[in-house]
Length: 439
Ligand SMILES: *[C@@H]1O[C@H](CO)[C@@H](O)[C@H](O)[C@H]1NC(C)=O
Ligand SMILES: *[C@@H]1O[C@H](CO)[C@@H](O)[C@H](O)[C@H]1NC(C)=O
Ligand SMILES: *[C@@H]1O[C@H](CO)[C@@H](O)[C@H](O)[C@H]1NC(C)=O
Image 1 (cartoon, rainbow, N blue to C red):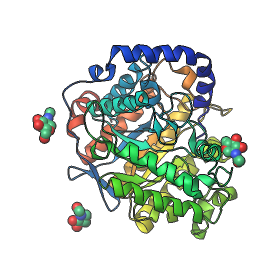
Image 2 (cartoon, rainbow, N blue to C red):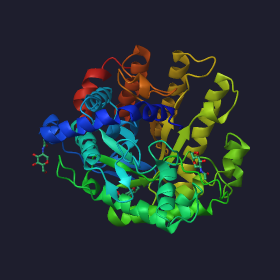
Image 3 (cartoon, helix red, strand yellow):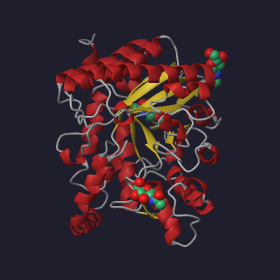
Image 4 (cartoon, protein in one colour):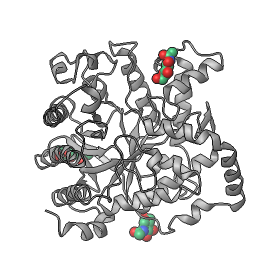
């Protein structure tokens, strides 16, 4: 997704950097505000594992009602916005959500975690520590993304610029992120620092922390300068192997949008349009790599088709999902996660009932797949916010408890999945509140 909210946000914040450094100073003088705001009693979680096309927790099958809040680390940096993290995690946990996908990167820009290659802002790292500690308190696991293909929060463009500025870059092309040895080295050293980070609140290294569902290598990778797909394939092999060499316990996904490429000619008709096979990504080939544990797919018919009737969008969404679930069962033998989906409010005929219907199609496909023990393993709506975040919204933002029908739709999914797979110990209290009235 193009994070227009994030772009607007950067624009908004530059004028107040002076103010922000005062806040930094105050933070330093008040000591460890993070520790004091997290509950002391540590909630016990175990690692999520995979066997074939299914996820397991404590030996029990685990299908996921998940969501995206990319902004958690960013908003945890400053005291004024930090309460939003607890509000979001607590609110979603009460709705029975179990996994949140969020950014574990911010390269070069405002509140950057990585200021320049290998240089980190401890203040921002503590914000990520806080997000992870707080998620654990609510029994929520995190799917953490390590870099962006897009420019929001730095992305591959920032890495290329760093290499160029230091005089080691091979090319100014954004795609040199994937093939330039210096940039690969930058990224690996970033990954190593994050994976071996010792959380200052819990004392647990990230790689040993079961609160982390898994690692996503890169959000929506495309390498349009090599449509054969070889360049991206090579990068995924190298980086997933590298992550496994440091952290063999966590699951890994790529972060793909799900487009079929030249190695799957029979599948090309399922792509939204012809252009989708020329982006350098190749869903089946990329996801087959042995160090990739599960596949990821996004669903954005608003961006993929210029003018498409709403009913046709719904039909396309079901077809797109079923095709990938079939791949998971037949070709990959791995779970398929729909890690982003949304209906844009910029459609001329948009209304919130349509968005509910759109979301319901996706949740229903996951439930049906789960009932049949097929590979569709979870869905992550793009994107949830809390009240008062209007300036961070894009055309997909939802405050999930603001509208009764939306609230019911997502809580019903938590209850339906729980009925199928049983209740995680961390969820029991929340589900008691919501599931008795749910269909
Ligand atoms: C969590 O696990 C630790 C170590 O195994 C144990 O000492 C502690 O009592 C557990 N806490 C809860 C709330 O179950
Ligand atoms: C994975 O599932 C298969 C088939 O159900 C089972 O035989 C095998 O023991 C499982 N492996 C692990 C590591 O749990
Ligand atoms: C890299 O990507 C950015 C953002 O999409 C774009 O503005 C820029 O022109 C690209 N640079 C090159 C050399 O392609």
